[in-house]
Image (cartoon, rainbow, N blue to C red; front, side):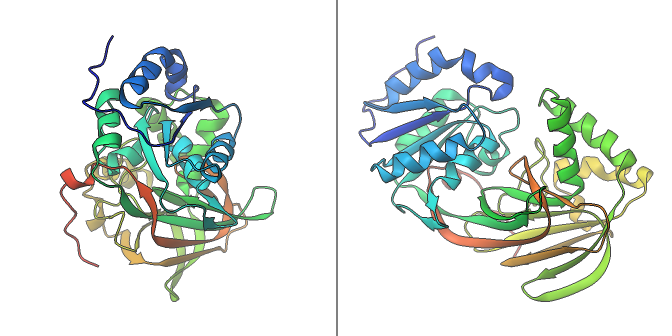
Amino acid sequence: MLLTSPKSRALLKTQIIINPESNKGQTGTSWGLIKEALSNFFKEFKYEFTEKPTHATEISRSAIKEGTELVVGVGGDGTMNEIANGFFENHEIINPKTSLGIVPSGTGSDFSKSLNIPRNLKKSMEIIIQSPQADILDIGKVKYKTLSGDEEERFFLNVADFGFGGEVVKRVEEKRLKRKASSYLRTLIFTFVSYKSKKLSIKVDGKEYPTDEYLIGAVSNGSIFGKGMKVAPFALLDDGFLDVILVKGMEKFEFFLNVWRIYQGTHLSHPKIEFLRGRKVEVLSEDEEDVLIEADGELIGKAPATFEIVPSILSVRTNLANKPRATQGN
């Protein structure tokens, strides 16, 4: 399959980072087609495949320090998360002029949906090279404990959550289920049957909320997670705020009766769901069991945790100009 070449090819110093295992390994098997498309859109580029966890972060950081102007990720949300973390060293941006380009090639690729980037090889590359300028977006930062008890800090692009979502991701990873929507949804259902809501203390911008039993808390920069769930339908990637969705404990019947509403983004009116907005979210577990945390679809650790917004920091090639903005106010 030949892709029509654009009128002019990008001349930026470009690094391509490919996760060959993404999309159930199809990214790796389709590399010939992807490389051909890249050659049509970029006059020159370097490329490298990821081989281990955090490898994309290492490649990205090294490339930017060598003067790379555009880093393009080919993979899913986890790959993009790793690449974005490579834009920083010692928690500081290395070169604010370096841009991130995204070619969605994961089973979920929820962040690309928030950016209005289609799951299409040619169209996603057109967005990368034809954007008149990159958008400067907010990102999230989370300080947490690793499963071994060490304190760490990392950035996230889209959504991080604590509680039930972390447990679902853990089970997906453990079972190595194929990461299509049915597998994720099946794991979500099975996890809920045995999951017990956790007793948590929560602060948003210093305001304490009553300690309560929570099923999940989603801390959202983007609007979509969990393979298409519109968890934070009013979230904006450039407003300087995190949208916080807190779900209190639900009975099984109540949960299964309402879970479909998350896919449509109509769940915020439910009486057991609280919608908050802030710049800093602190979560402390009052429970004996671990409260797991996932970020951009990857299990990273456990509470206690602090989530913060880092405003207007990351240059990203997006299609947001052609996406209607959410109307919910601050």
